[in-house]
Length: 76
Image (cartoon, rainbow, N blue to C red; front, side, top):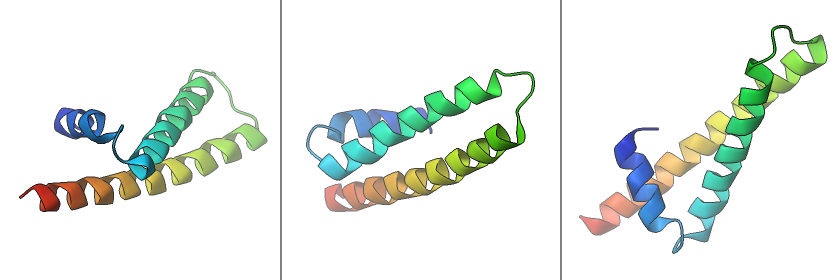
């Protein structure tokens, strides 16, 4: 995410429970992916898990961006 988006998230996370949930999930999935990406070799199950996490993370990021767009529109 861009720095501007991160700053907006930080300013809204305490007042928007939906945003907070998706953002915390995003950070957790990012940590899980980092753990898998640091391995020199992934088993087929780990590779499948990595792809599953990436899909969930992308869907969550899309939802975060929708929430941010709504907040930006409300503020304009």
